Length: 301
Image (cartoon, rainbow, N blue to C red):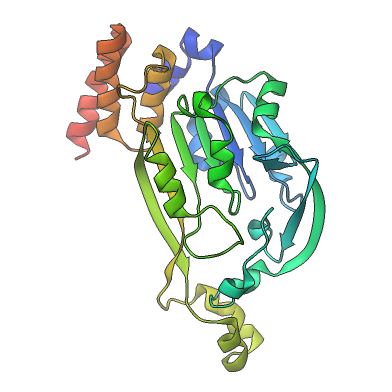
């Protein structure tokens, strides 16, 4: 049994297992969660039922899995318009900003095939309904509403989240969307630090230029051609600081935070968490984790 299994098999975490939340779970539930899936409660949402079948078929390894084929909103609304796009991965509660998107190679993926009315759910209502009081790892790719969904949880829940992942836009992909700079400004006011960011993008070539100079076949191939891309969106991860402001976190959270930092390859931070755990709680387990962290840092410079 490795160190992760040892921690997640302890009585405290068996009684209060990790809670993982995935909004916009098209394609697959987060690959990073596979090492901890059998110990965890996973809550997954996706409003585009053209892709939601995966959650039941490919995620049976979780201790408990809740799949909601419904739209998550930051406000109490009975129904809202949902824009089903050419690519199901671009569907959103927000209308695509075609004026902006027409300047980019992937703009045609956002063409709206259908506007449907969907019922919405509030995250807080879902958590209450299934009896979950906290979220440990929050992940969202909601196509433009990441920040407002995160903020809707309220300060008490947010401050106890250990890891938060987002996929905000940089360019104007949707009308009124939450963008990267807005997310960074909001997280700067909370006890979180940015642990990773990957800037993703596409080529700056207008749909008009593609239509004028390329055939339909070659136009479709442009998405995979190696000419220069420009920033369009980001994949960004934040960790709870486990610092002075983390008074609301307990032994269980520190143990789980150590596991999450290990999964993320943040070996230096595993040592910070272990040493803070020793100072705050005096638990022998943190001495063992500090020793393990020291070796990880030394052998993985």
